[in-house]
Length: 206
Image 1 (cartoon, helix red, strand yellow):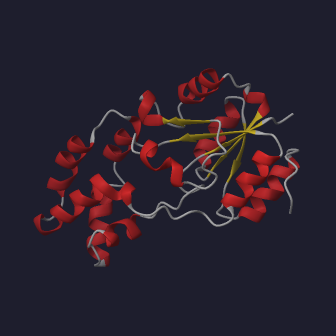
Image 2 (cartoon, one colour; image 1 turned 45 degrees about the vertical axis):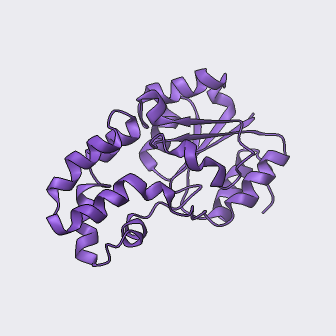
């Protein structure tokens, strides 16, 4: 029986759109956005920031020299401060999380994210409903590694067989299932997610 619903953050609770982020920091040309994104958000270095093994200063020092000099100042500002932008909530998530909470389920966030997540978590959908937040950078682990799921369950005293995990990344979903936790791929479609939760016995409304 499902007693616990676990949410990824980026792409599930909030929109994470590098194009929006970069344009918000003054990089408007589509080719420039592609260049900066390729050398920052889409790199292994960015994964290491989420893993907590690379700090902002170190990330800037690695990423910005790979870009044209004219873009470096704006890119640095985006890399350091993207998380200060207004949180663009995924529509319908506030209502869904509040409903699940009202039904008595335990709620958690399990996210690949930098430690900055702690500074904006109160702006996420369902803020105040979550029993705990597990941030990859705090543990120097990252999805879809087995150890991050195991540490998450251990830290909060959860039985994976009683959890359902929601993530927009198919690899994370597949590995969660492989390690013993049911999981749902989120396709940015809250009505579909509601149906898939009901199929698992989480009796949210249609």
